[in-house]
Length: 81
Length: 81
Length: 142
Length: 142
Image (tube, rainbow over all chains, first blue to last red):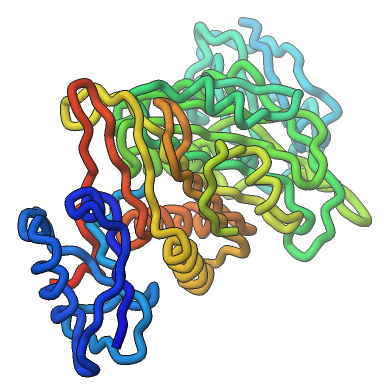
């Protein structure tokens, strides 16, 4: 299945990517996607925080299954306000 | 000694007076002034609250001596805001 | 800035006057004239003050709040005279580097204003009018 | 009213849009760009958002606050793009009949915004620039 990923702020700066597509098996979880992205973007290993994750714009956790999800966003700790 | 009194809001409406002067003995207190005003303005007996008192614009109490005070204000419970 | 005024309160101007470049947080409270009170339809309000003492008392509250909270600037402005529904009767603005102090200072300032600043409102409602008597604050003598 | 905007936030307009005639209290919080942070001289800020999710998240916070507090109306507006020192980056406005609810709702809304709304600031300071990473809120996964 094809999942769109999105990076924001320092994550997109580190990777040089704001979004892209990954093809994953049907039982994949957020963590599997992150691992896949880690091999595509080695600089992800250098970030100094654990991102938050949103599946289709709802906060999710690392074990969330991706079946039925279109877009997964990895979010640095937010700093709005 | 001569003391200026001031009434505000419902107190001035009740009495028809906003200010005036009272001559009192040198050892008089706020309560003495109030008693004197009570005989001058009988409608003061009808008010439904105990006024706050300010001597020269500082909150004071009923037993405060008036020596050295120029102006005593009787204040309905405040309702600004 | 602590004052009474007959003119409408211009919020943008007030914030500009209070805020400085070191401030990341501005907390504001506005009291506004509402169209109902204790079941009555309110038509408008009239505010009266003991002017010199009201300003002194706002200044006293200001000093106290600036001591008690980590805020740099505080403004309290109260209207007097006749106000229509929807108008702002009082504005409190507190500015500081961080938000918690600004919000707590703003709350403390408006709470104290309502307890001790010698201002009174008369309510003109459908069928009559009445001076509103506050609950009385901690300074209320016996 | 929950939105992101590139244009400056006009506070008077925002208050007009939120306040209704039954409201006696409006509590406002403004976040403003300050000229220093952790010992650095800040030149300006750039805000980035995950736009659709940020608005959804502000709406979710809005529903929660309106349920939890006795307030009628809430607005949250956040700037994105480049902001200069002194500009307002976020405005939260809560309106209700009475003041305690308005002030508590305003506080809750800005606290939650800072925890969960996907917006980030990049600080451009003397000698460099850096994305600011928040402390992370309660929704932060392991």
